[in-house]
Image (cartoon, rainbow, N blue to C red):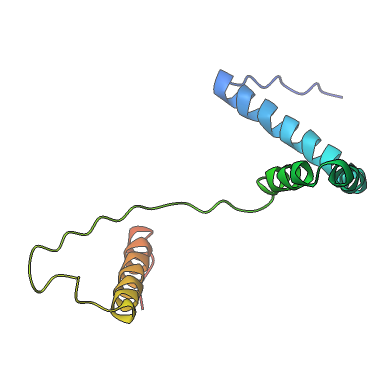
Length: 114
């Protein structure tokens, strides 16, 4: 049987590979301890409900996608600016911008827009 050739990884590749292995092992550990974690939370809640809630919320960070924040600064130097727009008007502008952005992505990726 022929020996497998050695694969030489760059330091970055080795680090990413090690990180992936560790994450996989932690996922296995977490799956195997779901019942234990519930029991630990229940016991903690008996003594310190606030601590149990804090622990629960910290665990959620690993399973619920985080929302990103965006800051929007609008200056309205003219009478015909955006200050007079209603919420439905602003929503329509946002939908139009998202549609245009999607069409630009389609064109950038080489696909045809319809």
